[in-house]
Amino acid sequence: MENRAYELLPQLLSEVRAFAVTQTVVVKASMEQVAGKGKLTFDLAALIGDDASQYDLRYPKIEVLAKNLNTASPSAGKYVNADAVVVVSSTAAGVVEVLNTTNKVLDLRVYITVTKKE
Image 1 (cartoon, one colour):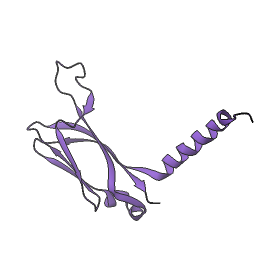
Image 2 (cartoon, rainbow, N blue to C red; image 1 turned 30 degrees about the horizontal axis):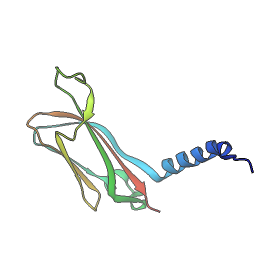
Image 3 (cartoon, rainbow, N blue to C red; image 1 turned 90 degrees about the vertical axis):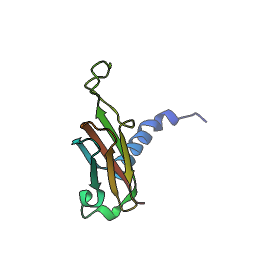
């Protein structure tokens, strides 16, 4: 029997993409400025609205990037991983906090996604 898996690959990739699109929603994608030692708070249920009960708010995927202000750096002026300058937390109720651990004002890009319940 001939191996015909390569013929099914486009169909499988299409189904995987469709699953990913229908099962995950971007709750927040924004550019924010946060003061030194300040915090940003996002209530995911409020951001999603009436459909919030359809999503698992307990385990959001959170990505935070900070604008690199170090002019001597090769990535100066670009947004880079912010793990060194922020602390991110979330509650089971779907409240996300991004805390600036520095004394400087940070320009942040915040991306939050949640998964649809099965």
